[in-house]
Structure formats: C-alpha cells, structure tokens
Length: 298
Image (cartoon, rainbow, N blue to C red):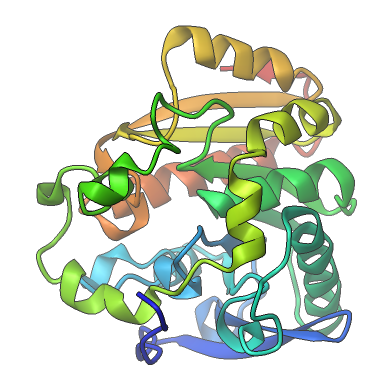
C-alpha cells in the first residue's frame, strides 16, 4: 500500500496516547488493568515493518488482542507506533534508521515512566523489524527496570532468498504463511494497521545479520524468541538456533520456542491468544526470578 488507511477503532478499554521521544511525538495504544488497579508490570509492544501499533489490537476476533488480554491479567500494555509510523509519519517521511529508532524508543519510554505507573518494570514484546529495535534497545539503552524481551518474527539469519524479491512476486505470502491460519476477516480489518515501510528502515533490513553479531553480546536481560511453525523469513533450523544461543551468551536466561499453527504475523492469526499467553507466562517467570536465581537456558 502506498498510504496507510484510517486508524481502526480500538478495542474496548484501549485508548490512544502520544509519547514524547525527545521532541518527536510517537502515537501509541494503551490498555491498563480495570478499576485503576496498579499494573503488575508494563508490556511495551513494538510492531514490525509495514504495520502499526494496531497489530497488537487485532480486530478479526475479540480474543486476539494482546492489549485487552494483558490488561485482564493485570499488566498494562503499551503498543507504540515506531518512528515513521502513526503520528510521526508526516514528520519523518523517510522514517529513521535502526539505531535512531532505538534511541527514540528509549526516550519515549522515559516520557512514559514520568506520566504513568509501570508496576515492577517494563517488558519489551516485539515483532519482526520491531524485534531488531527491541534488541538494540536492550543492548545499548536498557534502563534498570527493563525486565525481559520477547521477540517473534525475527531471527539473526535470513532464510534463503528471503531478500531476493521473490516474495513480492508471490503476493507477499512469506509475510503471512498459509492463509488458513488467519480468520477470514483479518484481510478486511487489517487495512487500518498497514502502512508504507519508510525508506531508511527498508535500507537497514539487509544489514541486520551484521548488526546482530555486533550487539548480541551486550544484551543482559532475559530473552525469549518465538518462531512460528510457518515462519518463512528466518532460518530456525538446529544449526541457526545453536548460533543464536551462542551469540546471546550474556543474557541471564534465553528461551527459544515454536508456535504451532502460526505464520509470520502471529498476533493476527488464530494462534494469537495462545502466543500472547505464552509471552505473558514468560514475563511472569521473569517477575518470579527478580529475587535473583541463577542464570538458565531453556
């Protein structure tokens, strides 16, 4: 698409806010626990390329939204439109490079902490290109209250021909996987969350394997990777996963999971609720470990 569609009406209980990223406004969706209860922690959701914050508030079926599920379980969920998307799209028509996006996200979260309760701390839950931003943020801009990172739709080694352009000729199927994995109404409701990929972001996509090698050793919080059963962008064979583990050796805990019956855009598919519950269970484990148990790898 050349232009984004009008924003969808958020799910009940979800509201729009704006964050200050050192002078650049970033739009976001926010859902807090009911009855003004203090959050157990805050989950910050970071969308992928060509999407928006609404990716985490899927409208095809009522139970797919990460925002409403997290709030029901006592978490605040904040889904941020990355630089070049949403409110900042007109100000940053070319977007921002990966490094600048990590700086902007860290600044926006500083603003958020000053205005809203965060509970025990922050978790990053990121998809696809957002996973790159989350890892770079964890490596170089992690505040003391960053408790863990969950990443889906992103690895460290691209699948063969992933960047060849062949996917465009197939109608973008690599980005979705088998269409049976998604409710049919996904393809009538998702227009509101799609957006053009800014040029500076597009240019950084091919450089990710090199960037990952340079930053992975600086990630010092628990990390969980989820690969969809039908993930087509990334290698997730035993050799690739072994290398992924070795690169993230400084993380006190590293989990690698697979989500059955899911394609690349997990949070829009039938498996979204299962996936989101697994993410929140990982965050629960991180909260339990805050007392200081030893490192572990799963």
